[in-house]
Length: 332
Length: 124
Image (cartoon, rainbow over all chains, first blue to last red; front, side):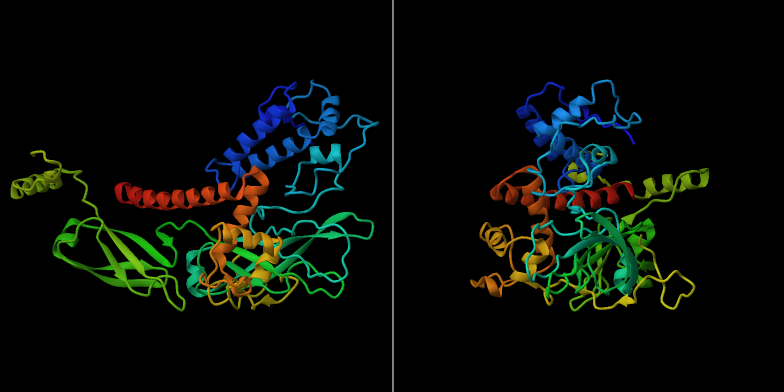
């Protein structure tokens, strides 16, 4: 296991005050929060940061961590010294509120696993389900918590419906109160017409209830993989279609790929780049299906040999009075 | 991990259950009640009512005054979950969360327009 330099992660000096640590945390948390950040690796950084803060904000843990000494380097192979934490007693306050991300082995070797809530606010990678927030104490009858997971599908799956096998990590608490995870594989039929960022609900696939309480539900958040040529906006689907100058100028019927297969599309004469052609109801299917938009982009043939160059020179001659920059108020 | 499984394909490792076909899209027709929605977000209903009052969430049936007649679809679920995380993780109050969500929406709209323009200009 690797040593973690919590001070370095938070960008503070080892003698930083608790206020400095809090300020540093807030600042970095805003920067790397997965819901707001555009930084690559934001989620990993945010988790690391949460772990560092968990230790440094708590004077007891901070003192214990400092006991390890300053000779360790980040990522260095680490083994906790025997009895390193003798004489410390960790009160559990501060834990359990908010979300406890999954902490590193390093953290757990120092501070143990007992308080892990099993709540992963971000659902992790595809199929990594999360439990609800840990609610301590026994109640007589309570419905089980709802679980979450995120799954990636392709646009085409939304046109046809699809089946996905997801593996859920289900936290289990045994009689002694130890938390372990069990894998639960589940085949899910993803309904046709699903749109990005929609949730689907699987009744009774969440955590078991207490007493006579019924099982919680499983919610799956659907995300679409980036497609090589389609863009999705709500239930509408966009395709940028390259066309030759003569197709745009004279009109043409061209073959166009759609998620449902190839269709023939009539391009009106005198079309310009950016012209939008709509195929009504060919977007994501549903009660009110979306539309499929083709956006034209004129692509000139390359002028990479003498004959082509001669042709372009001929065009220049032919269209002498054409000024593409007329709107900019400049002469050719 | 996820894997594509065309219908009728055999010889694949079976999952430990049959295929769940009762998956329901949380859309306008299958929107959640206040109680279901609160349970799904693991919060008290009072908290959701607060989010609606703050204008952070908009139930489907907006004109309804009675919270028990409210219905929530997927977009509201996503907003509520982001709001909860921002509140817990960044310690911002509801007004701040509302502002953050509004700005995030605007960024997303702008990003999409930018992507469209990029494609038009560069072909990729």
